[in-house]
Amino acid sequence: MRLVAALLGVLGVFAHEGHESHNHSHHEHEHEHDERCGTYTDMTEYVESGRIAEDLATKVCANPKLQHIRVCWTPEERVKRPVVIPVWYHVIHSGTTGRLTAAQVQAQFAQTNRDFAGLENRNIPGWVQMDITFRLAGTTYTDNPTWFRDLRTHETAVKQLLARDNRYNFNQYFGGLLNGLLGFCNFPNSFAETSFRHGCVNLWTSIPGGSSTNYNQGKTTTHETGHGIGLFHTFQGGCNGGDQVEDTCNQASSTSGCPTFRDSCNRGCPDPINNYMDYSFDRCMTQFTPGQNRRANTQLFTFRPSLYLTEEEKKAVEQEMPHAWDEAEAFAHESEARYVARRLAMGYEE
Image 1 (cartoon, rainbow, N blue to C red):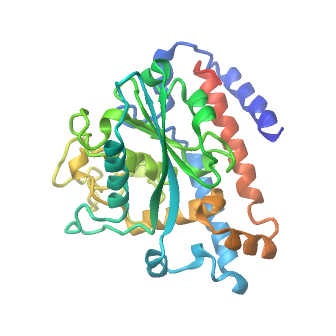
Image 2: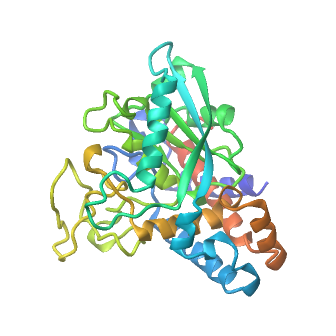
């Protein structure tokens, strides 16, 4: 009922603002940078989710009885015992087109784990070994030419049918996308923890060895997974914006191609052109940063605790702080209502 009430309120706002087009040609205005990634970004929402997460982590870690909770560990402790997240790969295809083989699925899965482990290029300063890794829980295949043509249009139907319990799994979807999109993925705070809407959508030709020129080494899935664990684009907001991560320099715009150096804001702070959350060619994407790793931990802890914590850790927090996740849950419900309202206003079916 909370989602329905919030949705009605948000729909009223969208109607008042005149967002009533049902022409799918307008869909790409839904995101700020429409050339590669279709993730919708709301800076106010993103900043607030960061505040909520930092506040909760600070309160939990200030409690002497909760020092064993993962989010309170040092980075050195966490990397020794990374959280292992089960991931499901959902392959939507049209006959033989887009029907990834088991070997292709394994290659993409291995590439994502390699990227998270910081193994692509350790000669470039700033890399980190993320303390998050993935376990391939299973693969599903769905032969549906309509869905395959554009997973963005059919996102709701696809996820409603295929998502494996998002409380305990990370879902990845592969198929076709239009308008040059390589993928999109929402943030941990975007939906209620139990929502089927979590999960990343990836263009099937972006996998290792795929046919997407310059974007066929599997880094699209790494990039989208970055959103799924709470990371913004490094170029978010330009020179006066920022991705709320302390060790990624501001960028005037996204990176194109594979430059050796770029300081687009002319501040003596080089653009993070090798970061997975920029738009460089796949061969130039080689790293996450310690700051991004820290944000990912607090975001998952706050908005997807069942995915991030053991049952024992979650129960310990709830015992000491019975209302620990109340603010985060309310915020996620409101975010989900806004997301649904946006899709309806843009003419998508829900």
